[in-house]
Image 1 (cartoon, rainbow, N blue to C red):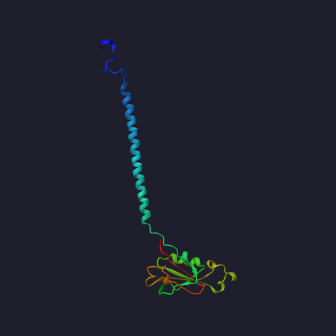
Image 2: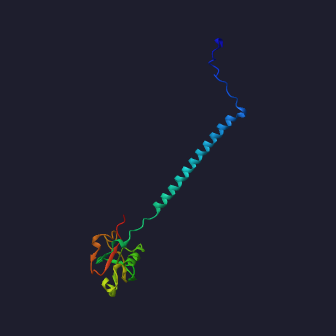
Image 3: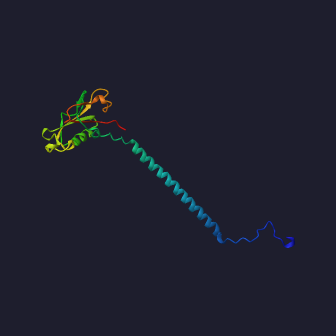
Length: 172
């Protein structure tokens, strides 16, 4: 224009010629890389969410393990209510084996272990209660409240301290 000033419509410096659309190709590549990265992140997130949901549903569908009857073992405990014995009796090498036999059956709600006569006391060389061989009776309760709640106090009575008993505790 007049007076040698800058023309406000034209840029102050000339644009650099873009040979063969090089600048456009660089930007297209950057956009494509960003879109690919975003897609991969999205697909990875969805896949991780699916795996987590499958894992959670597997954990929720798995039945909770019943509490062990071994945790309630005590000397002198017996059950003076109506029961049904799961078998006549079983020989067991220890109190621990007797409660494990009960735990292995979903029907078993209680057990009583009576050590053999020759190994009743630790002084006789028979070891502690958990190391004595003896007889194991496994049972289920027939009447309420014991049938529904084997841990109910009215289900237990106390007999000889040479007998040991345990029952299925309340699930937590």
